[in-house]
Length: 195
Image (tube, helix red, strand yellow):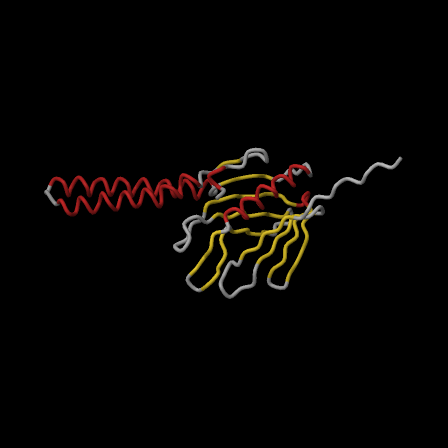
C-alpha cells in the first residue's frame, strides 16, 4: 500500500508598481522560496537565505495608508515590498488585503522552514530617537508660542497654533507611534505595521 504524496503548497503572489513609468515588481511564495521578478531581472531566494525582514509604516502625500516590508538576503541584497501601486499619474492605489495576505504568508513560510531571520519593525533606533527629539523640540516651541499668543491676547494666532498642533500630532505623531523600533516573532506580527 503506497502512502499518498503530501499536498503541495500553492504559490501566493503579489505585485506592485513602485513608479508610474517603471515595470511591475512581482513576488511569489513558492515551495522552494521567495521568487521575484522586475526590471528584466529575476531570482529565487530560498527561505533559509532570508536574513531579515523589517516592516514599517511609510505614508506619502498621495497615500496615507502605505506600508513597506524590507526583505534582506544573507548576502546583503534587499527587496522592498510596498502596499500601494501606481495606477495613473494622479492615482496611487492601496492593495491592503493582498499585501497583508502576502506578508502573513511569507512569515508563515519562513516559520515552517525553521528560519532564523531577524524580524524587526518600525524605524531604526537612532532615527527614531532623532524623530522623537525633533518632535519634543517642536512641541516645546509651539507651546511657548501658544503661551505668548495668549499673553498678548492674539486669539487668531493662538487658534492657528492649536489647529497646527492638532494636525502635527495627527500626522507626525501617528507616524512616530506606528514606527516604534521593535522586534517580533513569526507568530505575532505587529498589527500597527500591517494595513
